[in-house]
Image (cartoon, rainbow, N blue to C red; front, side, top):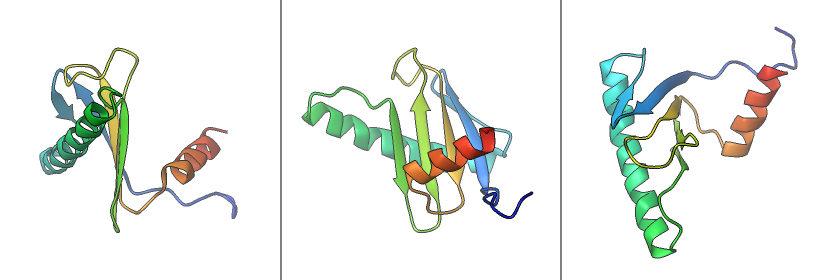
Length: 106
């Protein structure tokens, strides 16, 4: 690893499909992510309804010691539709996360 490369993120990945959250990270991680995801999605639905924007297709929650993200794929934003999520073990603004992800792909 070069000196300019960012250190790896403490990252857990999740899949969203058919109303279920799944991951290789273990059931406790799935349960914790699912609870935070449901709260974030519910909040997004309330805002979307108030502003006539519809259901959220992505969301990000930043706490002091973690960042939670989710995004639905092209199929739609219903709980049954496929999507993905991540739990990052540090506070990470969305733009910085995308920049670091892009630098890993380059």
